[in-house]
Image 1: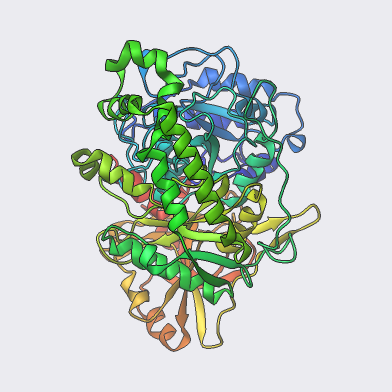
Image 2: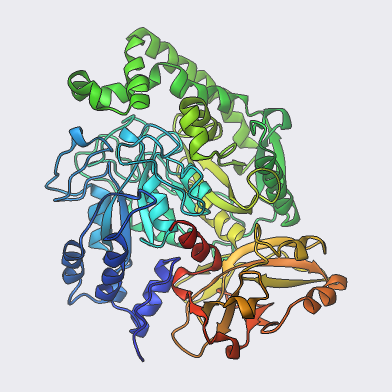
Length: 615
């Protein structure tokens, strides 16, 4: 079979491993493609230091002679936030004057490389991991991969953007106050903030050392779990290391190989405690997410969210912020002018707090933990928006501290209360100022419930769950007898010009997923697309790839009029999804491909359009 030298945009571990097994791609070929993309301009300000081809090839060479089946991350490219050490490459924490070159990689990085993963570069961040915006960097504001006008989220900004742009299959960030969850939400990614200490922070520049967590960005919950399984473990010399003891919980249903949402009790803040800062786009999207859980059989239980909110205020409105100063105090005292002005203000202001203030805050935190504890007697997990809102780069520049703080409304309390959290995509905003942008929710559990949260994500995202003997598809909520499901791939996606043809017929979004790896995607020329930019999806016998689609459920009575509006060369046929299920969906006649551009490498229509908008 002829090798296909085009890397898919939405790189996933499963896709890469399948292509390696089929010998349609090699790690060396993948590195060549990544090096070609990272060697050019960096309009999104993703990198502080992208590795060169030769540097990446050293890791490829180290794979020689290894059996790919014995290395769980064989040939999988990953990006590293530049406050996490990679041997031989400077660590800057976003501050050039602070830079040092470690001789040894961080403990988590070592584990990943030993499992076959290939580092591709050090990513941009809010300086010293202080911020949730991605703006506070001397290397330039990190631009959102889906819409460069918008915030990327931070502080692990470049780590999220690298995955969203297909420059890495997964990435490492850090998360003290939401830095690994907010950027995930802004890019439609999975963001795992594990239990404190189970991913070692040895070799990580501290922000708040007692609270810091290494986080994981990925396209799928399965990828996040694979990385988590490899990366966790106690490292010698790590004073905050913690053995992972997976909690026994009914959170994900009765069977681990068939997670379900039915019967799961989600705690949601009281309506008066929800805050969106006037953002109707996000408020409506959260309503949709709650309705979707109810339809899946989950139980939503209102909880008193005040102890969580009071805890969140402690992080930046009290003496806990002094831990950020303690992390870099000698450097700060001698090089304050080297810091970004906003970071200098935040860290410098911490000097006003006394030891007595800190003890008082610790006592207050103990009280809040006690008040929050009874909540868990009645729920399995907390459900909340990942961020209360989003903002443009210009809005953040005009009011950097207040707008940034809004992003942390639902995130700042998690580490102070020693909880685990998983940010997951929840579709797109369909109304208001942010229509068409991704929206995300977070599942929060107690310490060591990381695996249970990932099981919830399998059910929420409709991912296949791999067992030792089989691959089993997670059951989706059944269609009613009076409805039909249709997969859309281009102009009918949320936020695209023809989406109204679905919504005006009462269609509702069921899930965002991908096709099976038996399709290719083409950008049709204007004459074939009827004046509206559209792609053509074609089933192929070989060299296919998974393509991003949305599955919509439409009343059967409206289906005929919808199909009647589909012009040639497009038509409706049967599509196979990644989990093996079949739905109706858009397909294109091969006769229309003359003059069409093969855009399969982008993994989907949105990613292709985003790449053109960034030019």
